[in-house]
Length: 116
Image 1 (cartoon, helix red, strand yellow):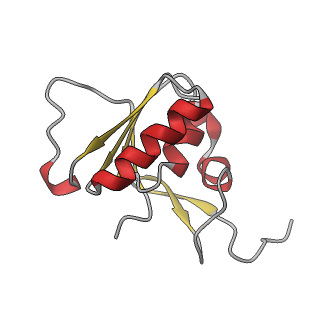
Image 2 (cartoon, rainbow, N blue to C red):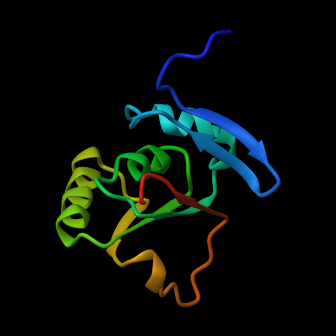
C-alpha cells in the first residue's frame, strides 16, 4: 500500500505510538492514524486542543474527553461546536500544558498534537 503524501503515519516507538505528518491533517485522519482502539471507551485528555477538531472526533469513540487549550476563544468555539454536534462527553478548559491542574482526575490516554 502506498503512502498518501501528507497523510498521517503512526509509528511505534519505545515510548508508545507516535504519529508523524507532513502537513495539518483533515478531521478524522488523525484519529484513524492513531488507531480508534486506543481510545474506545477510555477517558482521554487532549493537551492543546486548539479548534477542538481531534477532541470532537475522539468524543465519538471515547468515554470522556477533556480538551485543554490556552486560548479562551478557541475553548469557547470548541464548546459551541460540541454542543451543536450533541456531544455531551467532551469538555473544553482554558489552560496551558506547562501549568496543568488536573486535581484528582485521571485519564487513560493523553494526546498532544499540533501544539508546538
